[in-house]
Amino acid sequence: MNLTTKVLLAMAAGIIVGLGINVLGLAAEGSFIQFYLVDGLFHIVGKIFVNALKMLVVPLVLLSLISGVCGIGDIRLLGRIGSKAFVLYMLTTAVAIASALIVAGVFGIGKGLNAESASTFEGAEAPALSEVLINIVPSNPISAMAQGEMLSIIFFSILVGISLLMVGKKAENLIAGVEVANEVMMKMVGIIMSLAPYAVFCLLAKAMAQLGLDLFVQLIGYVVVLIFVLLLHLFVTLQATLMVFSGLNPMTFLMKMRNTQVFAFSTSSSNATIPVTLRTVVQRLGVDRSVASFTVPFGATINMDGTAIMQGVATVFIANIYGVELGLGGYLTVIVMSVLASVGTAGVPGVGLIMLSMVFTQVGLPLEGIGLILGVDRLLDMVRTAVNVSGDGVVSAIVAKSEGKLDRSIFDDPDAGVVTPGAVVLPHGTTA
Ligand code: ASP
Image (cartoon, rainbow, N blue to C red; front, side, top):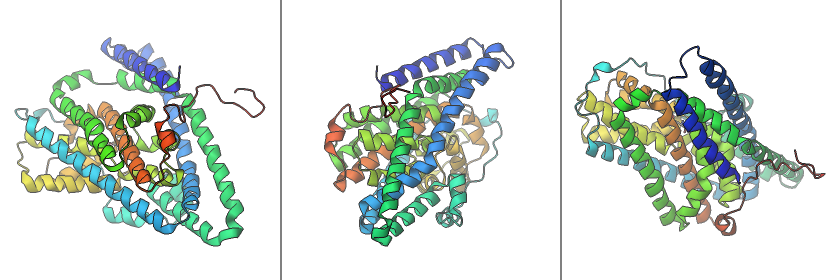
């Protein structure tokens, strides 16, 4: 059985077990199952796994980007890759939110509901755009790395790469060293991925055990429309974009991205998924490392199609509930704000709600409205994160293809880069 099958089975099992615990009411506060399984085993194993993924993010981005820049060797090309990726990321996000506003508007979700049940929600502080821009240049790269500030790390790594190239011959050994170190990190990604089936089971069982199912029933219109638009974006908009801009086969793309989507779904974090996305994009889709090492972390930070869709649907939903007329100007503001907000916030769990409070403040919707959808956000966060990372994959493939940096033989080979579980082969032939 290959890893993808195992992970998918683990995912299904985790969902069934978690929902079973939830429906049977076994996860009551202080119960045995809650204490030892949900908050015990599931929590610990899941958290360890997410930590292990996060552990790789900073060194991996740093090393792969430095060696990527050295691999490109041409600063103008780097600029072109950067601009193409940026434009595509912004464009897909804008399309995502526009389609969310349209579909949610057509269905008129939230009409006829009243706001009385609203709980309170404190609008969280979202970073100002000026702050985001200033912080791209870290005053202290070590602290940027310690904090996982992705844009600063990207900036620093690119500059190191460029400087290494400029030093030239003397730096050759160092460049070779960085390449080896990068390979070591990639191996670590493979090792950690091979443990995924157990972790995915635990992460999902815990998340599902804690779902508020009765809330889902109350908010069914919101949930169904949101998931519908997310799937529409994933299977139609993104795949059409891939086909039109690169001519690549969407079926192959989707099949190869499945693993990454499950990781994003289980961790609810595009950032924690970076190692897996990077590995998939390079080793399964055939995108050259020099392109992927930039587009993947950049996308995890600034590209959030799924999150933008949530914002569009939530805006229409809450506006209808509170009887606020947004008008065309209001909707355009929502589109611009969401796109900007997605640049300023990193891909970590639940950040979409912070961005949403930014959007609401701008268009004058009551922040307490967010309290209404808070209870169902956990599951929706999982789905939208899977859409977010798929967008990163699509753009990486398009940019690489357009620069002649996509290896078709890897893309077309169904078995390229698959992780074989349990096959951590040491040089002397023993298997760990
Ligand atoms: N969890 C999402 C991500 O990491 C962001 C969000 O929508 O909250 O991509």
